[in-house]
Image (cartoon, rainbow, N blue to C red; front, side, top):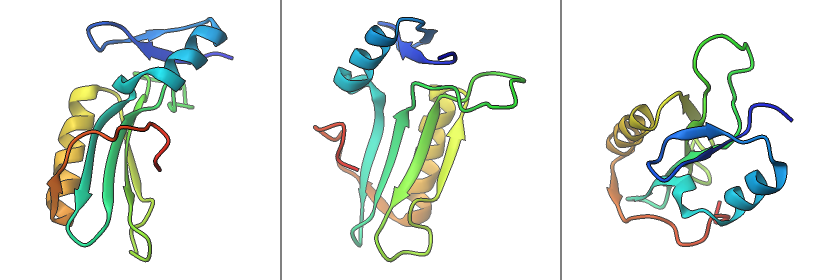
Length: 114
């Protein structure tokens, strides 16, 4: 498998060729969750480090972060946007929270909540 990444101690993505190390990191690192916001009205905006490069075209920087809306019954439920940097992911998350009228509540404690 190619294109899998973990974050180093400074939060920078590094390619990880060891599948065991990669899988362990994905299942145990709270650093995967960049932001998690509960929205007024019941939805959630979640921004995470994906750990896999979603730039399938193979040109440009790896696409490693994603913001997604989780809101049962909402027209935009499971709409998502992907990014090539953590800074862009944080900016995107803030934009989505503003768009959907949310209020920041902090990180999820469990990684598999969604």
